[in-house]
Length: 186
Image (cartoon, rainbow, N blue to C red):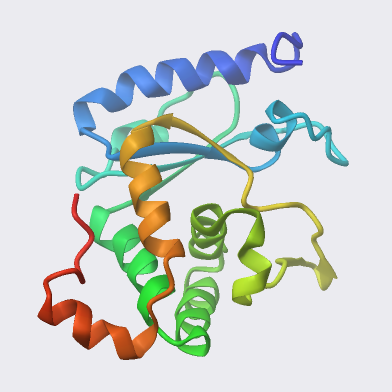
């Protein structure tokens, strides 16, 4: 399936983006969305029409966000503090507080990237946390938003996901601060 000639321009774009991102010192680069699902074996209800990427770096790649890679690319950039903040919220905040933080950003930014990032961190069980499927034009989208591919920074991403998934709750936040186990070790 990865050799499908329709995917070739997208896969080529990913390789060029990975190369171009090196100078921005990313912690992680993630492929998500319909292309990630297709590459994982889920054909989905439509053929991928773009490359959805999330890069975590403190050096926002503004120039790359405008570059033409021969196909549609949606490159989201998070500073390290933002993605670690989402992980910390998933770990320590009460579920209603964590969910309200995630969904308030959807309203403010008119994009569900924070919710998608949380789903990727938690994996297929993100629904158990309370993250609901995203609605598109009032219709529930049944696609699995946890499916992604780590293109760069796999070790860092794996540690962040473990940190986020280990629910400590609000009461353990204080204890963890006392024993210096609160911060995510980069």
